[in-house]
Image (cartoon, rainbow, N blue to C red):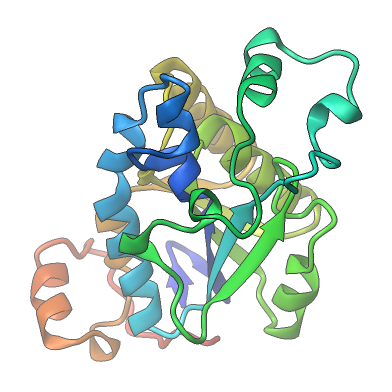
Length: 234
C-alpha cells in the first residue's frame, strides 16, 4: 500500500492486550491498579484489527507470559529493579502461561490466519519467532498498537526500527496509564523513529476498492486529499 509518500508492505502488531493487564479480575486489577485507560482503548484496537484483516494486512499479536514456576521472572536475572516493578512481581504472578489472565481479551481475540508471538520480556523481538515470520511474508513496515505505550509498545517499536523495519504508531489505538509517558513516546517516535497517526488517517490510505460497503461509507468522510488508488501488496 502507499502510506503518505511511501510504498510499504505492512503488518499490524498488537502488543499485550491481555486480561491480566486490562480486564476486571485480572492481575493488575487485583493489585489495585487502575486499568480503565486500557479498557477504553479496546474499541479502537478492535477497529484497527478489523480494518487490517479486511484488507489482507497480516495481524500479529504479542502475548506476554510467565511460567508458574517463576523461573523466568525478572527478579531472577536483575539485582536492580525499580521498586514498583519489583513489588508487582513479588505480590502476584502476572499472565501465567495457560491461564485466563494471560489470554488476549475476548473483544480482540486472534482468529484463524492471525499470528500470536509468545514473549517473556518487554520487546516483541526478544528471543521470539517474529522476525522469521515477518521475513517469510516480505514485511518491511510495522503498524503498532496495544499497551502499554511507553513500555512494551515503545520497546518493541524501537527494536523493530533498529532491525531495519519502518514503523508507524496508531496513536489512538495505544494507551499508557501515565499520560506524561504516553506523550513522551509519541514525541520520541515522531522525532526519531517513524510516523504517528490516528486510525482515521490510517484508514484513509486504504484503497476504497478493497473495503466493504460499510467501511467505504465511513472512510469516505475521513479520506485525506492525497488519496491513492494503489492496492495493498502483502
